[in-house]
Image (cartoon, rainbow, N blue to C red; front, side, top):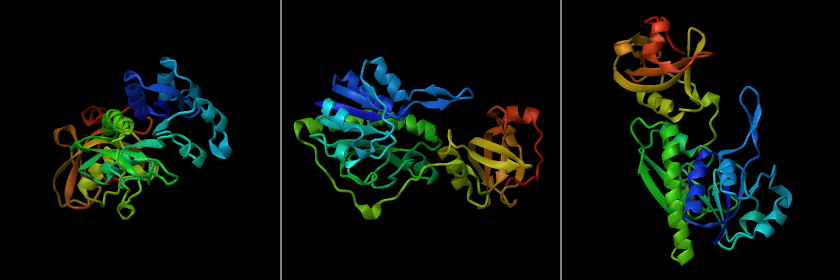
Length: 309
């Protein structure tokens, strides 16, 4: 089975490595163009490109797939199946319809819930107890194709989006191998999605991380986990942006939502809208380094009774 692999970020690397280590024939890798990064805006290759080149796999980085821009290369590569993992572009019909076994996608949720760009983060933000990997047969919709395989896992009580991202990338690789085995031996089954149960996980931006202290401590706790490492939950303290990386749900309080009510065990305790506090343990002021609150309090004064907004 000849495979064309399409992926871009770290999430897609374990699945590519799994194909390589299991001696699948990979005819090429499609990934996004190199992007400028850092203060020097140096062009930086995507992680999938670096992985592919280190294993002498041909890499393609088309600016667009529209108007059959990749048609000639696709015919030359002639894949039996296309495997997609966080590639970052919508596939047009001439690509979807080309391979014998179709195009399959490794998606970080239990479809039909959390279709779209940020399923891992949104599941945590919404306080879900479980998530998983879905391998789906792609069509022209966004994550609407038939389900081929689902692997479910619980979300850790304090697990951040970054930690879950890494864990699901490894589970995705294992689930991909199981799916390909079933496709090859003809035992794969297709299950149409129940579109009435579908939810959409829209892309995160900086505003996603803005804390509304009128919400419950549990909701804010979930937001902090789900936006770590990006875009990071944040609030204003005396007009300055204060990023919050880690926290725990505290105890009951009668204080106003957003009020700093104490510094127990060198943590910053803040009242939330449901009468329960949040214990902040890792922060970063704008222009400063990220640090635990014990270190932060050594160099910064915090006024009890001040309102975060």
